[in-house]
Amino acid sequence: MDISPHRLLERAKERFELGDYFGSIHLLEDLIESGRAFADAHQLLGLAYHMVGRSDTALESFGRALELNPRYVEAHIHRGIVLSDLGRAEEAETAFAAAREWGGGDRGGVQAHHAAKLANLHAELGEAYVEAAALNQAIEEYQAALRLGPAYHDLRYRLARLLLEAGRSLEAREELQRVLQARPASADVKLSYGLACYVSGDAASARRAWEQLADQDPDDVRANAYLAMLARGAEG
Image 1 (cartoon, rainbow, N blue to C red):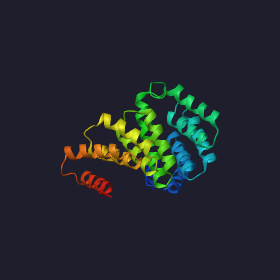
Image 2 (spheres, rainbow, N blue to C red):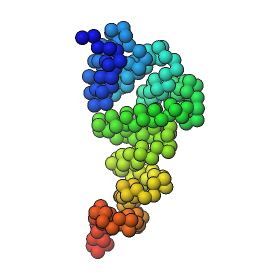
Image 3 (cartoon, rainbow, N blue to C red):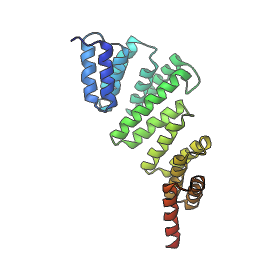
Image 4 (cartoon, rainbow, N blue to C red):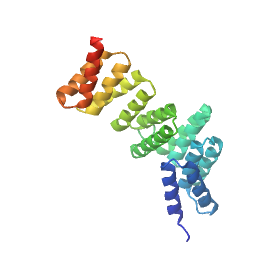
């Protein structure tokens, strides 16, 4: 059966999202060899190659995507990310400048309707780094996402949780404060904020956060458990 280029690309995207980067590469190479590939296929191939550590090959793929579509903002940005990872800062800035030139707009130089899509792409790449146990790279991707969409509070909360996991509690606390300003009633955010305060050595702020949560919901098991922990520590 002759599978359509669109279906092959969708299958490659599915493999990529599952973390099967080599499987995605195999499907995309088949598509490209068939002569029916378009810019999206080369763009995704570049991302897959980058995820398996073949950055030079990734740059070639992004270049082919841009030959087919010079206005491909995502390809410019992802090419810039790879160049930056390789320490080629000037070339990276040129790539980002090209993205700003083609995209225009007001969010990091990218139009708002592109920014949301790009922010989600950065978040997806961040989760891929989490699966690869590369927390610092995941954090960088979420930070890039928030530069494009500073009001995306779900992404900021995820960034804060990753910062906590990476032992960067002061940075996590700062991000959680910003989320709390937007979502003051969120139990999960309040609980995480207290945890960030506690592990950064500020037990008093942690207690206040958890007491507020307990007042908000007296049956919240997590808040009560954390407050009990603080009480035992005070008694000791």
